[in-house]
Image (cartoon, rainbow, N blue to C red; front, side):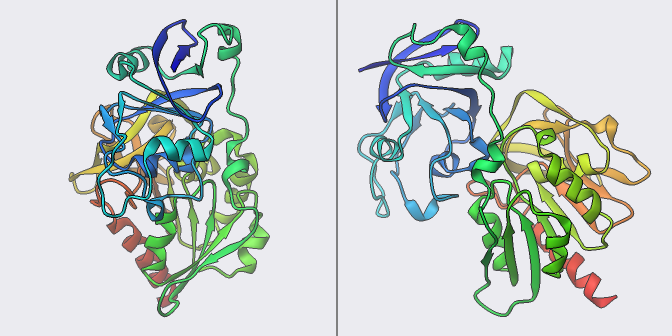
Length: 359
């Protein structure tokens, strides 16, 4: 059965249907990751977006549900050059097409993903419709699509606790803006009892937990839309409690300090993005998934300094605060999937909590 991708600029890509039936309008983004497609599909940061895989063959090792980064698929649609119908893996439970059908996600295969990626790279991220007829939606309808309050759709509805297997060494209050499971696992395996909190939790509730550290997770959408979380962090940033942020959490912490953010032309999505540590000069390969940036020239150098920058385009990838035990990064040190070069950042967070206890 034929299916189409219609971009807001009028470009039409004809391919074959896969996944669930139905049509969807969403923001179209691409990822350069060669593996970890299940982690991509279930990453809450993709809420409201349809993902294009630049790697040509997807689904080779099937679906392995323990590897999911959340309880469900979060992408609105999925676009690949070729989908593997006969996956080979001793852990495989089902194939990609069947999984997308079960999750109610429409997909598209058999299109020229190189041409599509080039279009998005040169023209910038844009909206598009995955549909069964190229005239199903008008271009005005496609252009009008907005991702509305995605964090509210992916945050935990109530406080939940992730406990370590052994002794509890630290208690961490984590704002869940759309957390990937592996972030909580990385902290738990370092002895942290992680209290996952709804994104709109106020400062008083956080302080009731008596946390040793505060963590701001990744998540979807425009950081400036999270006004409640920004106001909460304006209070908590001066509490003296160690703070770490990742991705959207990085941006929210920056906004709480008065810095500015903006949308990138086509974002950073993939598992091979190089960043440079400005303190040591060392370069790390990182996993990334974000469409917004903290503007480097908005950082007040009296209270903070750039920690990491992107080697490819020079954009900000991390901030270290000078007057408090706090830092944040734009990339994903938990890297699931992707390189584990920067897992030491979790250890640095642990060290900050240890140092606070010693004082």
